[in-house]
Image (cartoon, rainbow over the protein chains, first blue to last red):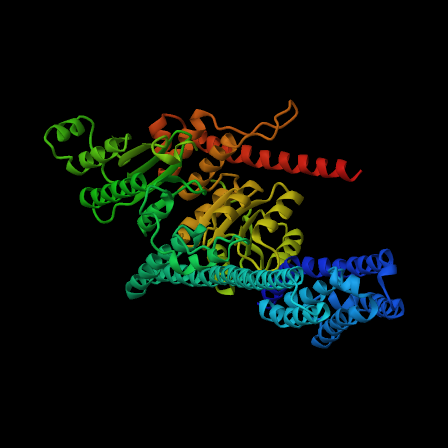
Length: 414
Length: 225
């Protein structure tokens, strides 16, 4: 079990990296580039500054801070609240310092603030760390500081403020959605892993139970009497359970996973009744329940897909044929079902080891309408575009061979 | 059958002590020489090499090493060894894999003691022991080999094995539960011929499997060089 737990944890970690890591990496790059851009802007507009000393001092702080805190913007864990607070404080200080460093012309002309677009990086860190609420919290003081810096709510300032606001909230929202779907995916992976583990455990347990049942049957047969009866019952249960276990012929709930859609997981609870439409079903899963102490079931070891209506009709025909065996060859008669998946058709043969029908008698019986069941089987198969052959060899029982062409309906090509 | 000269040496591999003992006792009481037993895969490989049995009665669901792997290793080391798979659950993939890698018989654990004894005797003389279920699987496997698109068929690629019409006919009759005797009657051939046909269906599958393995090994070897 612990092995599975580890696997899940590993998968989740991998997934988490894939969703969140690129954002943090982008943020690191953004912060360094915008820091250099802000310094470049200042250098190109050096003569617009009355007191360049203030600006230079600020840029030295900004330069050192941005590079020194690079490790802080590598992941959500490293990005502490204290770092975010100091970071935002530096951005706000830079904005408020702008009027002191630059001349009035620079301010009224809508020139950039000292940190310029570096500020957005600080707000984005809030958004990535905590979602859209944090983004609102961080972008509001930035908006206020911008308005103070400008002195009046000029149109371009308001425009920029709204831009920062909207962008940070949008990114915060996207991050939240990404996290939610990531959690869903992790949960789905977990469910899938536990399901697989449960199937494996079930298989082991079943194997043990099968062994014991087969053992009881075996000893019972030797001891005879009441024990023999017990053994016979154990044998019947053994066959039922083996049919259930082997190859999972009975449809099991499956989780189909699509990493991109968290909603797929919900299908696990919904499933249950499928196969009401024309979708292909595995014929084997419909025939496997017929296997019993006196009925052997041989199949090709791979799914035999047929359109649902054909498969159901075919299974019903096999059921009718088995009833017929019981009625005419007696309760003790054994029967064998063979499923063959030919390229163009599916062939199901039901054979019994009854006395068989002597040659000549078959046609006679058919003429007298005494082959009611056989004829109804034939009718069913004809409706499906297939055929039913009745072969009887004296001493070797009776065979009903049912053929259904595959090329009908949607599942035709294969 | 002439089993009177010297008793058939049998080894029983099963992780359930109850089963192992019961099978070994039944075999010993019927005159077989049970030379060894083993409870897990690795033990089975070690002891089989030391005890050199004629027939290995093998459960597929084993701890340490799966039964299929045991079969592969032991038959690979000693092709004369006969393996009879005795399985409770009959996992299709496992059974088919065991048969492809050298097992010549397959029986469900629910089979009666007489059936088991008969199966061991037949396995010892090289006569394949088929249940109808196994015949169905083998038929299915040939069908899959025939319909799978051959991977870029060049001249030197081994061709997928195919059944002759007669072999298919025989195998279908086995799958429908007819005994070899009944099949012989129906097809008007000798009992021995039926056996040969069944044996061939297995032989081709095992040969194909070996060729595939060798080809795979060569490809890997060339890649490494």
